[in-house]
Image (tube, rainbow, N blue to C red):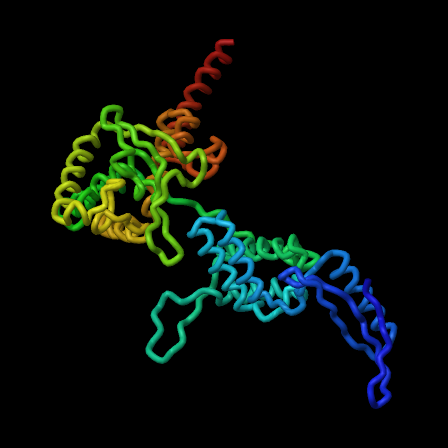
Length: 411
């Protein structure tokens, strides 16, 4: 129970101390005091501490800044092991941006005004400039997009919700802040003409020896629509040459420092583990590529080349290729093909899904190939209007209307 006691100093000055107990982060009980000149003020503070610290079990939040709590909650998430390395890296980055603005504020004093002001500052100049700084100058800044701000807001809210669950604070201040609302970005899909240009460049990259198998990689992306992490994790033990199928159960993702991390049976979701067919046209290319990898392994020496698993698109020594390297190589093909504004791997994925729907493939089959749990997500996210299909639909409906009109006139 919190209480108030009268205190007389050596000089005879009278003061009143509010006394209460709290539980520290290591589980120890600690007695806290605060002096006031008036007894009424001491009683009010004691009542407040009793309500917030003793009855709700809030710990030593008054001495814990947001920056200190950030490190604490990130360590907790890391030890639990429920977040992927890329996700944890994103959380650390976003909380770090928030900490630049509110890191010095105690989490028990953090309020909606602090958060709103922090988001406004980050929106104006929260990003690092892409232009290299001149020698002796500090790196420049650039505005953050609303979508990035939404990620920052969500991670900050998740962190403070954990603080509330730990009873370090009585409420999550992010709940009183309106979340940023980015406009839905229209995703450009790769049409057949653009795909042909990119594929032509992929053939040149393969035949020149710069990136052997690049034509096969683009062919697989175009015909299967698999994710970047999935094609990087694709190995020959997952390919059935007789049935022309590939099994998706292995991925390669970026670790916290961008290093490639190979994962078995750890896909994006449960439905991402799947078996999908590929066209027989790719068989000669797959066999040719396996022969090339075998020759590369001999040059490296069997004991020095990674063959378990034997990845289709590895880096030196058969090791997994980093996701950013693959994206860079594909962007280079796009530039050479004069294809702009289309994502390196997801452009193929969106295009495949949209074209299959336009050609009459049922949505469930498309969703299964993409590894989606619901067809609703497939329709909302990955299916786009294919050029010319809307006009064809209008013509088809016009023909039906003409038949209805003729029947009505015959009467």
